[in-house]
Every structure is written in C-alpha cells, then in structure tokens.
Amino acid sequence: THLIDCYCGSGLFALSAASKFQVCVGIEVNEKAVQEATANAKANSITNCHFVGASAEAIFMSPPKVKTVEGSDEEGQSVSDFPRATTVVVLDLPRKGCSGKFLEQLYEYSPRRIVYMSCGPATQARDAKGIVEVGGYDIVSIQPFDLFPQTKHIECMMVFEKKEG
Image (cartoon, rainbow, N blue to C red; front, side, top):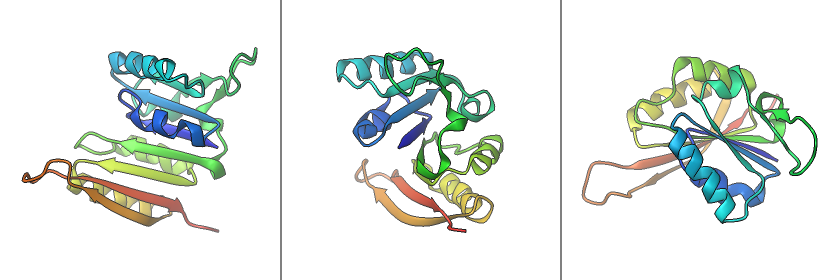
C-alpha cells in the first residue's frame, strides 16, 4: 500500500510504481532533484507521490508528514507510521552504499519488502549481509543489469522480504 523511495533522485522508482500504491514518498538530499521529481509527478498527473528534500536518514529520524488523501484537511501521516506489513522501501544508492545509521533505522522500521538497486556490487554485498543477518530478511530475487556494455560497470537489483515469524 505504501512505498518509501530513499535516495529518489528525480523520482524514477516512485513515479513508475505509483499506480500500484496508495501513497509514495521519495526522499533526496539534492533539492534540485526534489523539484524535478515534483515537476515529473505534476507533468504525469500523479497525485499520490510526495517528495522531500533531506538525507535518507531523516526519513525515519525526523519523518516528514505527508497527506495520504489528496485535498483533505488532515495534517498528514509520518512515514515512520506507514503500515510496515504493506510498505516497500526502495533504495537506489550511490556507490558507497547505506550508512550504518540508516541501516539501523531501516531494521527498526522493518518494512515488509526492500528493493535495493546498486551500481556498487561490493557495497551492495556488504549491505545485503546485514539486511539478511541483522535485519531478518530473505533475498527473494537478484537481477543484474548490464546498462553499460563492454565496461566493468553493472547495476544490480536485490529484493528482500521480511522473514515470517
């Protein structure tokens, strides 16, 4: 029902998936990218995506309030209050991967599913180990993408699901 897109850039994942979710929230440290994401949502008539300018750690530490029903007078709901059992967190990280501080918050929040895109195989492997061993997730899918043929660079998507019980 809910999608949290960390490191969202101009909103590619949140906007592409918006029709499958009630509410999508993207967070990005680059304010220009947040403006672009907001403009992309408007240009595509997508009203259930909200974008916030802040570091990814802020999504859980000082979560923004977003209106889950457009046009309502409600103050909004904190992202940390989204229902964990039906929330997906998307991570599209820079090569350095997740900070320890962010991962701790992610484990505590404990969403149902994590989708992790990476252009850094070594840092993705490091983070995946913690997501499985500390966070309590299973890897359900791994898909590499060769977007840069005849170079050593690859993108890789890993999907994690929270273990039952």
